[in-house]
Length: 261
Ligand code: SAH
Image 1 (tube, rainbow, N blue to C red):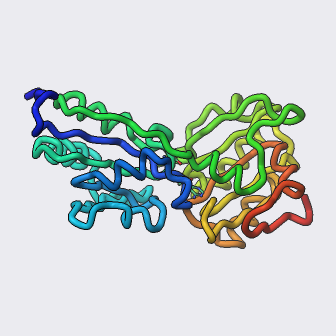
Image 2: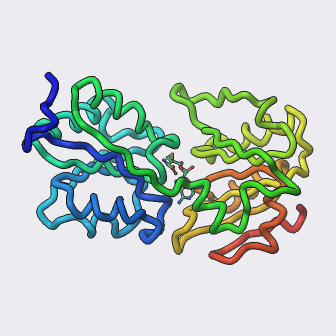
């Protein structure tokens, strides 16, 4: 059944990006909508303190989503949003980073569209932008990278089946989201497809937050470093010669540099 968008009771879902971790990287629009919402449906990767911006009487619904441990199955979650909107509520569906970058935002909107629920999307600072800026690793640089690629190191079926020849091309930066569990495989494949083992690579964990850690090294050294430093999610892997600039441009948080690199 389609809702009548003109009806004052018609609900609305805002798919809102909450940025990579630091609360003040939230957009003004996101902050306003969070403050107005009747219900906030949120994941685990949202900035500390963001829910304090919500009305005290707003419903807060956690649908946490860690890679292998989905608290609420995606189909159920999609229908939850439909149900809340049908109650006439203004719903903020809050996601980490940007909702259209590895956030399944598209899948959630398709269900809303099928059910005739009105929606809007608010972009957020994606983890690649937040981590790169706060690690001092420019994603592009005229001397290093003319292309930047965002890839996921975690596919629906648990494999990493990426276009390795394309990812291993020179003069580009590749940012792997959700790649920490697969770091050995990622670095191995990048070398197998033509990049030298000495090609610079870094990990940024908890980027933009006071817990940020940056590990720099190269394709050969980074996996061992990641295991030794017990890197856990959320973390990004950045591969490219731009990582070499980090020593000069780092301005925030802690860096574990690779003496051998
Ligand atoms: N929509 C989000 C990404 C969701 S996928 C965005 O645009 O940023 C979740 C992955 O994002 C994590 O596994 C991790 O790889 C990355 N990520 C999110 N926040 C991060 C942070 N603060 N530091 C490092 N990586 C982060």
